[in-house]
Length: 274
Ligand SMILES: NC(=O)c1ccc[n+]([C@@H]2O[C@H](COP(=O)([O-])OP(=O)(O)OC[C@H]3O[C@@H](n4cnc5c(N)ncnc54)[C@H](OP(=O)(O)O)[C@@H]3O)[C@@H](O)[C@H]2O)c1
Image 1 (spheres, rainbow, N blue to C red):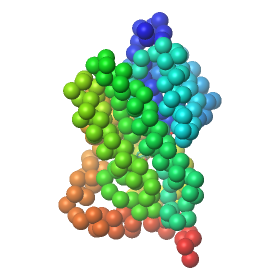
Image 2: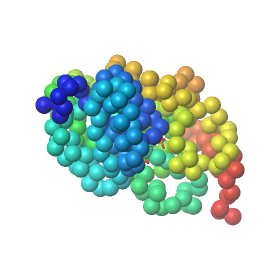
Image 3: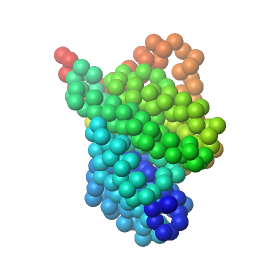
Image 4: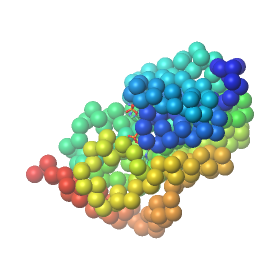
């Protein structure tokens, strides 16, 4: 059962209302996949679904859902099963960050970040990986980050969630490879999207974030890794060099360098600790 009569395969993309997730949906639809779009902003999802249907002739379903909610993965699974859809490609992309002194950041925001970036990602994977294993095919992409490779002062919770995502993804890759299911962690560096705005980076966006990569290029690399069943892909040569270089230094050194680069003062933000 495919949930539609057009006979095409289905992709489920979380965080499809903006940025990287939206481009994943556009590219998968261009390749002829039907799409299930998940995020909170219903109107943006519906607008995108309309575009994908009219431009690419695919079927599209919209499921507005806050992934910070405890029951979110179960609700998504229930919806997909209710539609009679088998998910062939899962893009676990939804996520957000924060920037600033940990002691000054909103506690609720930090806890929800763990819920969305980690808890929901595990729950959605747990919902859709078993049928993929049973069928002996399917693909999962998880959005990790260059932040997955080292501690990130002033983005402490975010960096830790992305380290979790990378380790979780690679472990799943090891488990599911013998069953014909692909799992890839896509690790972008700074990428053009709403991310920095949502994370409340200072207006300056100075230093390390000059020259963010175009979203299209990052997504192309993610899709190539997914097809090749590459467990981890760092987007861009410069970003890759950075993730390799950190292995050659004691961790306290790379943490000090990151603390210097990510210091809110570099982004025009005031130090609230004084
Ligand atoms: N941009 C970068 O520089 C960068 C670098 C490395 C990794 N990443 C990762 O890439 C992924 C996508 O980020 P992006 O750059 O595309 O940022 P973005 O433009 O801010 O998009 C984030 C997406 O996640 C969704 N989302 C956020 N909170 C959600 C929630 N509680 N429930 C459901 N959906 C939620 C948003 O939709 P709604 O607001 O409509 O819910 C939106 O569609 C994230 O996991 C991020 O950590 C980004």
